Length: 84
Image (cartoon, rainbow, N blue to C red; front, side, top):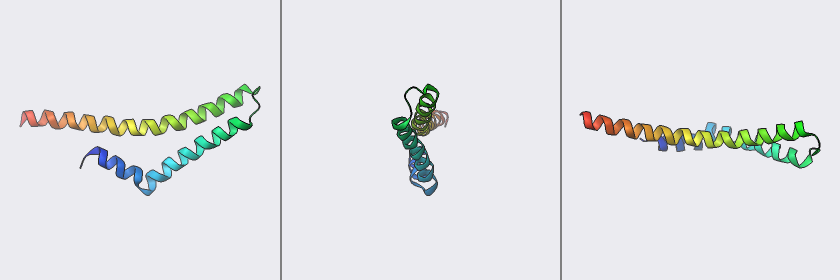
């Protein structure tokens, strides 16, 4: 089984869907907050922007970690084939 398959299964699992759902909800709340916040309240605008950005970055980071892990596993397998 490849890491990509495991990652896909995790993200499709109850826990994976729950985590990504929470991240999506947080991101949506931040976007909605940006629609309502006083544009002159720069601290609130910045905080909401950071929250939305963190949510997006988290999802991207999780996907990137799985991809990097899969690439590292392929390198390891290739190196072990040469040794054997």
